[in-house]
Amino acid sequence: MIAEILATGDEIRSGTLVDSNSAYIAQKLEETGIAVVRHHSVGDDMPVMISVLREIASRADVSIVTGGLGPTSDDLTAEAAAAAAGVPLFQDPEALEIVEAFFRTFHRPISTSNIKQSYIPEGSTCLANPIGTAPGFMMKLGKCLFFFLPGVPSEMRRMLSESVLPRIEALQGGARQFCRVKTLTTFGLTESMTGERLKDFPRVFPEIQLGFRAKFPEIQVKFYLRGTDADQVEMLIRDAGQWVSEKLGHKLISPDGESMEAVVGRLLFQKKSTLAVAESCTGGLIAHWLTNVAGSSDYFLYSGVVYANQAKVALLGVSQDTLNRHGAVHEETAREMASRVRRITSATYGLATSGIAGPGGGTDEKPVGTVCIGLATPDDVRAYRFQYRFRNREMNKQIFAMTALDLLRRELLGVSPVDQA
Image (cartoon, rainbow, N blue to C red; front, top):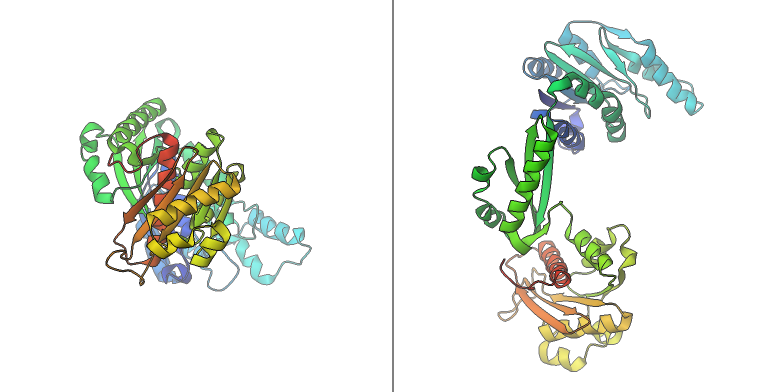
């Protein structure tokens, strides 16, 4: 069974509004074993909409259309669907009740323009909208079953879950395919380097589609597998995950698609350890990432942005002599920052960053992209220098922060902080 997705509206076609609906629908259809072969977007243009609907009907088994079910003159989807099918619109009693009930909830009289939303193509079936004024509908056009949903994401998602996916799964019956998508997260390899390590994957697992996604500064590895035997699908995905884990070594952050900050947080929590961070060049980005994880207060104690040298001295107690001799971007400075923030907060671990994010400020000795990272543990204090080639300030801040968290991750796992595995 194959599907095509159509998003309508001038704001979608022009790029004024990002079409997040189609991405969400595609993901949910893939999870049910439906292959999404095309995405379309059209403006509020009746002839174009009719043409695209008929084109989809000639190829697809299922299509989900979003947008254009509102009360205004540019909401043309129901009219276009009726014209494509060669049938008139009719006022559906169930659709009218949905619209009227919405206004009754807010103790408001129904407007004339909203009455328009109760008209759907003859022969179609109304789909309830539990949280909005725009009912959806489903209809057969050619061999394709169309589902028309509102463009408001919250309404679309609710209706997709309650009214659309159950019907599609029922259509599949005993021939239902199971689709498994698995995501693994890596750091420290480029996309091409990751691909090279996994070059034998298609030969070892010919049934599984392998994909890569650069989500800077991480690389995601994705598996896609469809099959009619759920247990067989799970077994193949599990075996493939183990194979990839062995090939990627400690460059693999998570075999389950977790972010770096989630993995670090989980490791800290499991070890009943705590963390304090002193950030200079990363400007609080490490703290931002860590606190994006629910429950991070269990292990994350403190972060201070000590950007200027006087702040490093006054707030952390970094030696002025160290700054005079080495400057802010140096292993010794990072070492003192990590040690001091750990001591001040009584955290298990102290982490510190100091670098040159650019685009200016670099020297021959310390070019843009240089970062020194300090890590204070219960046993010792270490510092590392890394050199990246990015000239973009935001990219440097992100990779500096990710490198710092990766050093901590490796420490928590008990593996070499700078190995090439």
